[in-house]
Length: 79
Image (cartoon, rainbow, N blue to C red):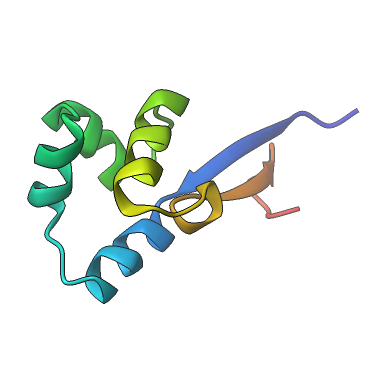
């Protein structure tokens, strides 16, 4: 059986911020998210559900508006 990795992207969040004319730094300040956590998000790395929940609460949106999940196989081909 092939092992799959879960890859996330925060592209939906960045698009939402553009639509709402909000800077990343403003969101970070309002949600009290550490700069290092935002760096992880900028690099499409996993962050805690608490961080996602705080963003959703501040922006009054859902998980799907913030993060997109993609499955990748071991070979790197998208499933």
